[in-house]
Length: 284
Image (cartoon, rainbow, N blue to C red; front, side, top):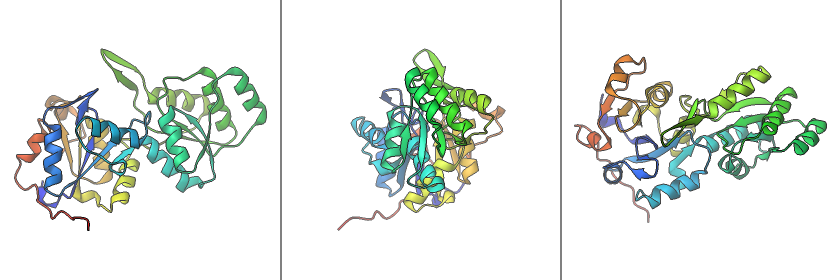
């Protein structure tokens, strides 16, 4: 592929920049060098448990300076989608943690969630109308919260999934993920979810629009072929798989989602010929 056309790098976080709470070796230095060359470095994640501001602060604490606008997560992307599709004054039933509800409120969207049986009984009697039910990962999930989502969809709410990840990785294993919750609600309601996060390109398109970038000049870098690389294909961007996360070279041979590049890690990108130096615009 022709790296000289690249103006921006869109990086997945977990498995590309860090693993759990530790930076992947060489990630900090590579990102610093990408920026020195004038490339815009942006970050995407399906994780909606925290806000973009919190992700930016986490990266900064880890030694990768980052602003809120350089991050796009599924919570923010869902909030923008809801605002554009249903209007700023729409009401949403939210299944998720504070990251989702906070991003919704910042976009001007009103959210409702019920957690207990008494709260659900009042909710059920009210038969309130909602534009959509938005589902993300929720470690405080209750049965009555799901009942509220089911009720909202019975009365016409659309089903929006922040992602369809079947599991949530934890040390030594995994837990049921957002996709498992969405599957339950899809089965009970008969509604087909609209997906915001990877492998859907929705989140990426919002990020490109925010920064005035084109898909063809933005290299999508991830560690999962059916998630990150598939999203890059849907976006129409060149893609690179790094081998610091989940998938391996053997997985590439078996997968229908072929990356344009396979890299040992982020520093390996700097060793390839053609990666441009761009003029850096200075303020003032």
